[in-house]
Length: 235
Ligand code: ADP
Ligand code: MG
Image 1 (spheres, helix red, strand yellow):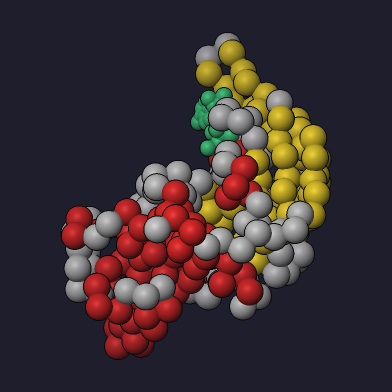
Image 2 (cartoon, rainbow, N blue to C red; image 1 turned 45 degrees about the vertical axis):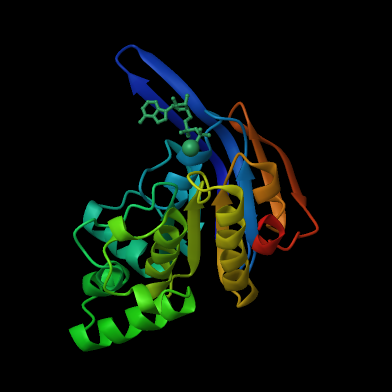
């Protein structure tokens, strides 16, 4: 599904440059649930942004679902993102003046799906994350956990090949984090490929494989025994 070879990325600021990714190699197969771990500043988000076609590497290759991702103009990059990828962010990134339902329907709007089908599909995914009753509410009327559920429904709405999550529980308390991870595990159980960036060890262990980043290289990449997330344990 994903193949990354010898990826390098530097940031340039005037005369200074910062070599963040120094030759990253890994592959992710369909249906995997992988976490990318590393301390703050280790390049996790940089790597995820490249995987998400939000940024481009300086060197190396990235193949997504058999398509080489290289030198895309913004329009094509947006099309690929819409077709292949669903995003979940720490800060939810919902549109504040749109309802939960409208937020979930957004990716479908960009895919040119007709309004009634959009609404129907968005409602289906809101039901899936347990928020059907909150469809008409604004993000400001929802708790952090509910906002992240809406964001997950939005990420799923376009039926992407891969879900990319950058610190999806970073703004949530322990109980809510485990609720959200329970939901994400369920989505992976259904076969969706998922990559999660986190610096929290217990969140990483809810996945099936941990890739450890340090100083711009992968220092460890191991399959782990998946711990089932259990929100009830925190009541
Ligand atoms: P992580 O997500 O692991 O905390 P990041 O990938 O965000 O790490 O950042 C890795 C390093 O690159 C950090 O030192 C950060 O300050 C730097 N960095 C990230 N984005 C930029 C940018 N757009 N311009 C310059 N430096 C950046
Ligand atoms: Mg980060």
